[in-house]
Image (cartoon, rainbow, N blue to C red; front, side, top):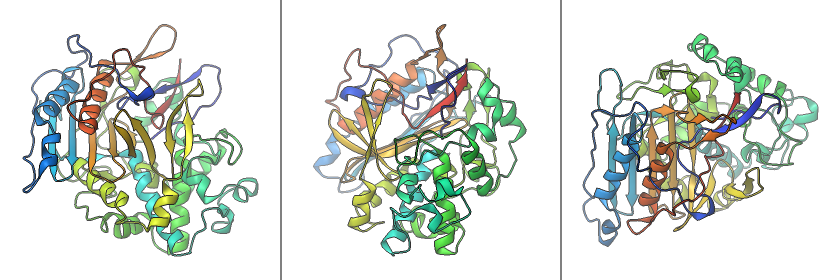
Length: 444
């Protein structure tokens, strides 16, 4: 989940740092200094054997290297991290670190996890299923389906496609829902831990927020877009959006451990979720018990890394959408940094990330205390999904610039090893760029 830029006075954008965006085709090297932060202590590394009949592709998975690079994430300061890697018939599942910093309970592979904005891919699939049925036109204005949802100046100009690829210009609601975040305080996070926020209220807050541009002008990430899409889905299907997505996307993909949570708890085995908020919350606080209505169809889903691999494999293989709609989904707009350099290519609820060994598709996600990444090769043969339980662990320097943490480098090394194989090496001194869909507004 993300927050949007408001004014330049006293506010700045800072990356959350789930991992590293592999700018210029490389990642920064793993930090060699001793572990920093509170992530040291007992750990657990688990892995599964290759599936029967793995074939020659199984040799591409260096299980020892994957275990070693995942453990390095924990040693760099991450409390707990879990990862699922696939290469055709071969698979590996690992975990390192702790799920609870007080009891030292070790984290386990395939544990339940709040996946944040990866929910957007699920919502986008549901919308594109309606496009295939002829019930939704990607280039039709929102007002065609929900005439009173947006002000006329927006409802007639913002199209469904603009919502899906984040070019609507509609602001994000999160700072309005949790206003203390703008001043570096977690007070509103704690106060509203059990608050239920209806989707229409989230849309109202997003529309009230400062626009990020004119409709269609440029890419600017906003959770409001995907809450609106959930409401459009309800209009054209006559069903609750979360129910529709569950029956027509989650179950159709054959996912057994993926669901929209009911209430504030995660039923089943899961880690705690620790939020540091760049040191404003010290020590990091557990937000694993939290009403996720604030995330709605933009980011509320709970899943496992193994299920995420299966989901993107099904999607990219044509199991959830016809070829025409999948092609639309992979039609992208550029996402640039402040220097104008293209970092990723964002499609309809999915983005393309170029690595030294090729292009990969997927999404990342963040909620308070949990971060997630899922990337797959275009044919779905090579995949990684990973999650971790400490968020916004980086710190600002005296000039207000967010500094990369050894965790970021270690995560980048693990992802590169998983997707590009044992022969891949990180380029020394390569620039580190945080995931652009995980940005937060911080007052300095």
